[in-house]
Length: 210
Ligand code: FES
Image (cartoon, rainbow, N blue to C red):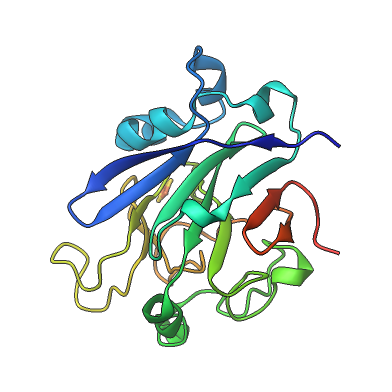
């Protein structure tokens, strides 16, 4: 099994959000971006371009990606590339975890009944470890890349926003477990990819948890 390690690069998405991006080798981005809609590229141009530079893993044709979690600050998001897709890893803090239980009534599939995740992530946090969400960062409506909005009750998202992912293309909203809210165009929760851990701070994306 060949694992490729990521390198991290911190990028400020907005005043409240620092995002760490993995995979920094600079090659043509065109091949990597063709799997996403033009809308998504336009809306999320900054973070998308940075994150979608082809990684060693992509070059290896979909090999598992080995991620060092120790560099992800509490509350921050790391994006890495796996099989040409952006994969988010969110280091959820206690406040973020608390909010996961507060919005159940407003979620479309709060219990993750639809098969958008491996069985080992069909739980309250949609994860193996509660403090880490691992999800493919592609909106389930038309494939845009949503924006990580960790701030609670920001002016533009309203008093009921407790942090999550906002897709500006058509207004879909997801909570910090990648569960879609009711009344938005996206039909399902974000996809959780196969993943497992090889130690306290080593995540492997692309291999199922035993
Ligand atoms: S692609 Fe995300 S809301 Fe349409």
